[in-house]
Image (cartoon, rainbow, N blue to C red):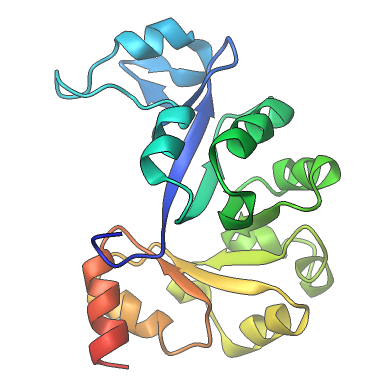
Length: 199
């Protein structure tokens, strides 16, 4: 909030015993995170100081006022994930995303009311018709994947388009050339500067 952002994106992994943790990589301390237990993950320290936050911890830290883009990495228990999210977040502010379109389709079958997104070109496998069908209400595209026709087609179907993986000013500037609905970046200061002062 202090940075002026509307929300935060983070990755979620499920442990072997059904815990959910927020971490980017598939491996932690030389082990597959999905093969570790909750206790094992809790004992690991990053840089000798920092614990890997549980999903519950992350939701508490974010509060209920921010948009949360929750990227599913190694997640099996979708029902348990939804239960955790509903207990700790305002679901009107949550978008669940994944590169795995099959995982998002499974999620749509059990929670059609939850906002969800497929990231990148996985969203368009099978052609434009599939792109416009549920559960693809939100599409996340790298700036280089964008073109006006794709974005117009998503908007015509009632969907939204987010730019993601914008690591520098040029990629942000390129994304802002299109009629998009949001930008996901590790550098919100660059996004805000370009959006407010150059557009």
